View 1 (cartoon, rainbow, N blue to C red):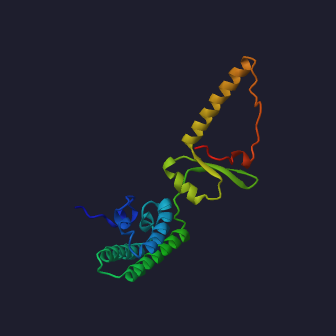
View 2 (cartoon, helix red, strand yellow):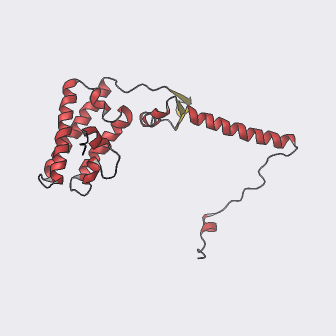
View 3 (cartoon, helix red, strand yellow):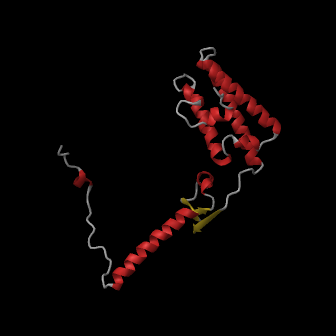
Length: 197
């Protein structure tokens, strides 16, 4: 049986693999809070990627804390350690994440993205990102942009527009004016009937 690395243990996506195998334990809600904070950083830096950006001493201290957390979780899972001890280890790792985030912010270590943002009167209406694999990261970093699209999405929108435009042009060429004949307004009560079955 292959043992998971710490990265696989804390970043894995399986339902009962790694930390998720301990969902029934008393410490799990605190662990989930830590994992949520870690995942926020993972969106920007990759799975535990922020550890590789900070200075070596900080990185080594965090790796050691994460390893000790994992050992504590596994021991508690075998009823050899109390949940309170695991929660203490979780808090140490949360402080480590916070320190690494501050380090990354202070040293402007946020990855650069190829993104173009369109603004109207100071309001960021939409953005276009070159690399589709960085879309989630861009959405996380640029939360003030209403929508961020990939180049592929823009291509599909333009293709759809082009197809729609061709249909309208064909209708007009055949003396058929594409118009909306009627829009019925429905109230909420219209949909509030008894279900007939």
